[in-house]
Amino acid sequence: MNPTACPRIVLVTLNARYIHASLGLRYLLANLDRHGGAGLRALTVLREYTISRPAQDVVADLLATLGPAAEATPQIVGFGVYIWNVTQTTELIRLLKAARPDLKLVLGGPEVSHETGQQTITSLADHVITGWGDVSFAKLCRALLHGPQPLMKIIPGEQPPLAELNLPYGEYSDADLAHRLLYVEASRGCPFKCEFCLSALDKTAWAFELDRVLAALDVLHQRGARTFKFVDRTFNLKIEHSVRILQFFLDRLPPSNAPASVQLFLHFEVIPDHLPERLRAMLAQFPPGVLQLEVGVQSFNVAVQQTISRRQDNDATESNLRWLLAHTHAHLHVDLIFGLPGETLQSFADGFDRLLAIGPHEIQLGMLKRLCGAPIARHSAAHGMVYAPEPPYTVQHTGVVDAATLQRFGRLARYWELLANSGRFAQTLSLLLHPSPVDGSAVVSPFWRFMAFSSWLWQRQGSTHRLTPEALVDALFDYLSISLSPALVRQALLADYLASGARANPKALHGLLPRRTASPDKAGRTLATRQHRHRELTPHPNPSSPRHGGSGKG
Image 1 (cartoon, one colour):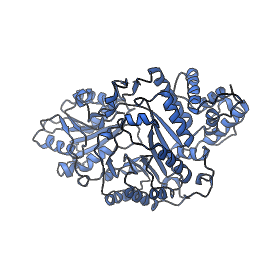
Image 2: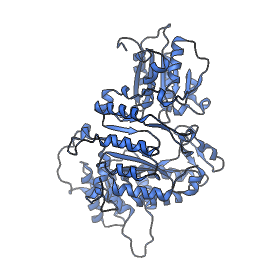
Image 3: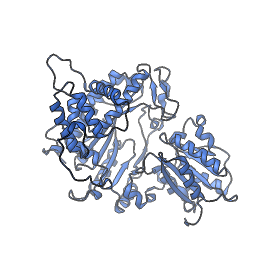
């Protein structure tokens, strides 16, 4: 587009962080000409902001981008709306509409694709596209700019064969490649029916033609892309495709002594109970720091799984996780959800302890959210499910978990993120969760040990945020020294603090820390820093693991 001309179409979204880049809006850009007519893409610009940026600032930037209103020249602003940005986007639209009533505001995205008539944000818009927007947004723009004017406000998105969609990866700029996560996909949809997820509404999964996807990924790689986050809901569903994608990246692995800036970083979401031998053989070939697998376990409670229509072989799940830890260098990020219908705190604790014993690098503790349109809503009456009325619609209480318990769990989840998932406190965490048994003392599970610490820390701090590593060191020392030798606790904390690379001076470690050089520039750190901490610090249950210099593959 001519840089001096005012755009006719502006695509906008508020990302959670700058490092995120909107895949959905880039699909819209890539398909404007194909499905809306030649020339539309040249009239369009993309503007991405973060949810932390004040709405007034965003509006000012958009008004500058749009230029002055022209009566004979309609302008369209399309917004990508998600559960994490709907509140801020609603305020943004209020301000923008007040400043420029002539604008045609179009909404799309999962947050406005269901229960559309019940949302404040949709009442402020001129049009809402529900479901897939790749084709329908282009057609709507053509109609708004050239006629005939659309009669409907709510437009069901058209779902074309995937072969009829242009891939969006050419819309990633060189700056995106250098500084942001690149979201890519080889398929859409999901064949499973887990009721907490909007993908339960899909009839199946649809795969893109793989040669086409790999050719596009090759172009990205040649342009310098090294970080790829696959958004496929079930990467390991179609093993033939999974194996070919992994081989594509194996063929492009840089030498082990190459600088960090050229190392690959790959993220995939996998189902936990499907890991055939062909896939295992491929995963075992990746070196440390390359693969991150996000594994949705959610619950080990069979009755809860049945209630929410989740099919999961728990024994196969455990076996596969143990195999991945023993025979690959993949960083395992495993999800559990608290607050599912029928799940008590004790049954969740049992599942947590089972997962912790397996030993994944991170256990992501989430609380159930009622996504607009998700089938989980059908259990509200029978299971006493009550959710917050505002996004992100977090469960407030259930028939078996009261509000106070859910609040306690929310604090525990935050502290777990700071202490365990950060990788900063591996040795100290072992003292907290697995202290040496005292003769005659009752065995307390790791979950309940951490819950006790969480309650103590909340009473001490009164906050789950703004807790520095140094404040956590001092808190852990004070808490653990109540029941353990202070010298033992200080030794573990010192080892963890030195290994983490932190460079301040917590009270508990005064006089023990060596003088160190200045911290390296943050811009030089890689996305794999957190995974590196886990590899270096976390004891592994299998001493023959390749992570510990054994003879395992990899």
